[in-house]
Length: 199
Image (tube, rainbow, N blue to C red; front, top):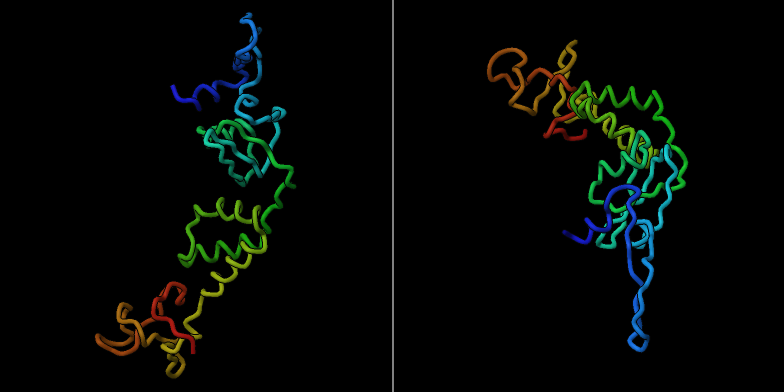
């Protein structure tokens, strides 16, 4: 059995250690010292039941500690389920994260419609916003700026009264006939274009 298994045990389990006897003392029986498992590992953690936190410090047997951020906030048991090798977890006294603004969520969803993000990434984005609101906002707005960028590309052409065509990608549908130099604009408006060049 590994040391980590002995230390971790089950919640509420008590570890037993016997006091050392100096070489010059006469041998005599010692009473066992009873201590919580976390204290034996050198981690004193007392987490009241029902506490939710968006930030936790996780302690491991190798002496390493990591900080994690979660959205929505998690309880002690949920954190240990996600990190089963952790010996202990303690909540940080960080303020509860703010909800992501609806306007930023709408901007993200417009990016999803053009294929810049997947809809399943919305919970990850909320966790990122809880950890770094300004950085997350800047990231989403930069991606959103890529939508409809065909108009600002050197390959964009608008003959007569048309909505415009692409003159730089051979993988698009020809605008008029096979091998015509102009192609129909991509459905994503150039958001994912690999040959986009600023005018």
